[in-house]
Length: 184
Image 1 (cartoon, one colour):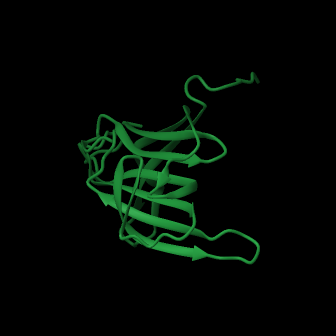
Image 2: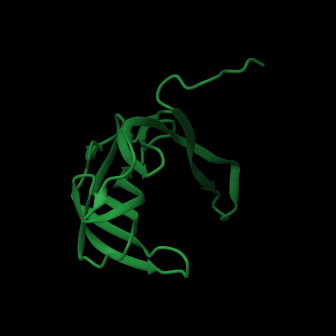
Image 3: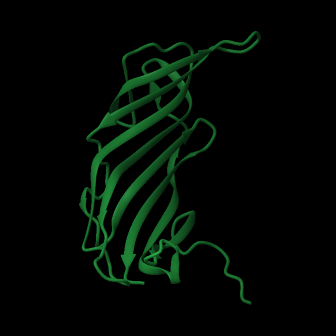
């Protein structure tokens, strides 16, 4: 067995291949001979890259310890009418960006800005411990933010998720997930 070292692109690459199957039941309700039909395969490839930007931005006047922004979409797939066929229609919709950040100090605002996006605050949780600084963890959502995701038709493939991670002790990291469909 030969070993392969390193990633062909990006910092790291993860590929997952799912075989979408249809369970086949006989007329008595029991699993039929063969048991299932392979409908199509779905391959997701996630590539992590490291940006040249170091550290975190600020939120208002609060220093950020760490933060994550995730761009995502919902998807719908029309199942193929025959085995081993690419879905005739696959679409994404409802793009959004969701953020989580931990800041030094107290934050109680109804909105906050991170990575050039204004998020509606979903929650903020303040923690105060004896001998430590006050920290607040924020969660927020911004609907309609697609970033560079594919919104609309994806049966030929597209970008369905992007995660951007900030840390005040590291470079910014981005993970981009692409999807592709094949007959089988």
